[in-house]
Image 1: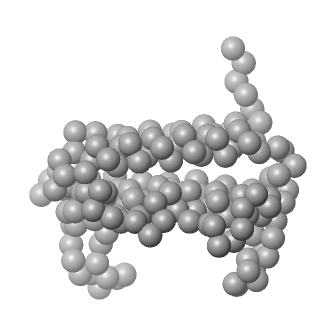
Image 2 (image 1 turned 60 degrees about the horizontal axis):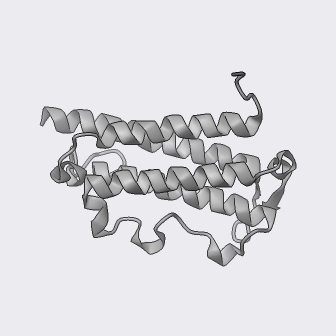
Image 3 (image 1 turned 90 degrees about the horizontal axis):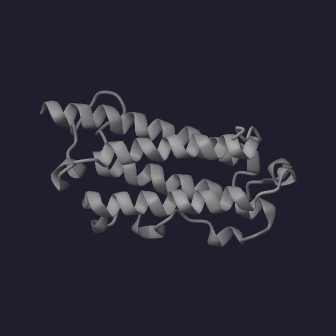
Length: 166
């Protein structure tokens, strides 16, 4: 079976790798690990995020950025852009590793649906951000979502290592 080499297929594989990392982060994790922080204060950038916060924000921001791409294509209104759980991004359900695994699976399925709905020409579309007026594009928001999820996964991986040593 040949490897699909389109840009959209490459994005799908990158997202799948990132969601696999989320799955690995949550494997065999007790609930108390999701609220654990390696430190409360730091001379640089203040308190650390908890493992649960890092994972929840990574998932939510991925969906948010891809919904922003949907807005640029004209599929949704600006006011309809939100993360996967809206204002409940850090709600109490996110303190349950099983719930977080299901949340990640739902987000991954949504990402697949979004990417599969794109035409190559959609990647060329862009708008000016309605607040900052800086230019954004569908391609940039997809890449930003991958980069942002990667960053939070990396922080979460280090936090999980520190939690295992605590």
